[in-house]
Amino acid sequence: MKVLDLFCAHDHGFEGWFGSEEDFQGQLARGLVQCPLCGNADIRKGLSAPRLNLRAGTSADPAVAAVATQPQSGSDVLTPYALQAAWLHMARHIMARTEDVGQRFVSEARRMHYGEIEERAIRGQATPEQTTELLEEGIAVLPLLLPEAAKEPLQ
Ligand SMILES: [Zn+2]
Image (cartoon, rainbow, N blue to C red; front, side):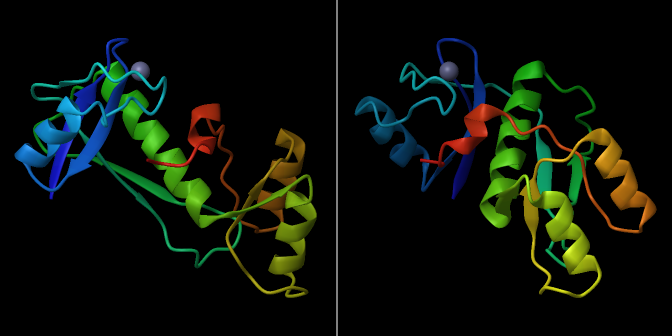
């Protein structure tokens, strides 16, 4: 497995996973490698882009998607492209592992906390006031603004 830092013609940075270098070149030649943000197929490899290791937490906590960011040692400088790609990657990760309950988020989080319904990982909308209330009740929530682009499935 080969993980490549790629950039489209519009300088969107993203990560591509390939079986091998030949696999990447083959897909590139056939126009199969596309930018997840804009669909551009004019892709080039980044030289030595720093990278973030992002891991979504387990769903042990019902209302929170915990994310640890651990820059690799020796790569303290993050380019905006790398950050953008990493953030999109993380947002997709969270969305793939949580159920969207929309406006019911606050009540669902409460009902889970008080054992009325089974615990699961959820996401949805809450106002800053509601978020504060939940936190004060000891319910773990993580305010996140998910980018629109993350709502499209990964290729
Ligand atoms: Zn792009």
